[in-house]
Length: 169
Image (cartoon, rainbow, N blue to C red; front, side):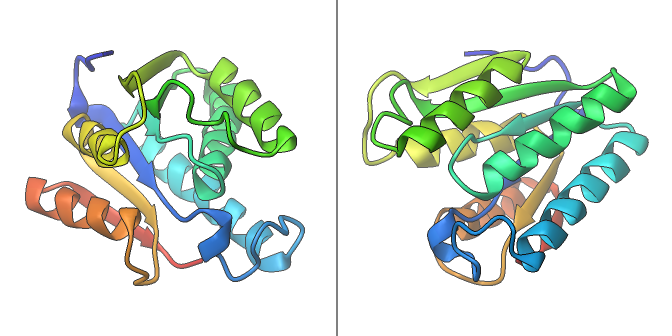
């Protein structure tokens, strides 16, 4: 596992998969485009406040939007490192081909890749979320109250005392 030297200048992200988003997988929907703009602006605000390392859980949907936003910021500023925190080695194996291609491209853009578990287990997503929270001082979350992994990550981040920035989808 990749251990961060300074979680104080690190930010992690949690958000919904397409099934929980009002627009589903339609990334041309104006609401999706607006969310992507908000993610970019929020990540840039974090960079300008001193954050230099960004950790992404690499799930479908919002995680990929976040990874793309941070990649754009890195092109602009250059001082950013991006880490893929992947719950298990074959995470994308059951995804549609277009999603697997996007995933592989985004993982390839990352400076660090951390596999939290080698194989799938019922707990591997929670272990990934715990890893991200334990290695960051800020959590950006796309969240509107729906139960699931993002809600659990928010609770974990609150208990750990992370700064939390919520963005509604």
